[in-house]
Length: 118
Image (cartoon, rainbow, N blue to C red):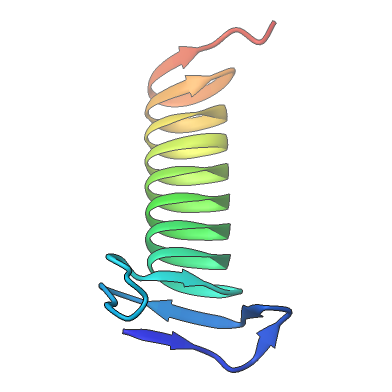
């Protein structure tokens, strides 16, 4: 499935959706790139997908300023394994961390591991 809005900002579509393989573009996974991107691999301001990268990223593997996912990496990260400035998850590592295993200068949760700040 492929969809791109006709409205563009520069060379980037406002909405892009891409799921599954596409023989015409020789893609094994749907790669969506847009301001709002939804797909197997999504890149955009708001990105939702199995692998997502953006300002707000939601996915199995999320990279973003605000990231939610199984593995979340970002300034604010929420996930099974969360790494970021503020991290919340089963295993959370960050400046402020909350989780079953929390690692950082200011951890809170089940098992707290303090890392040195100096």
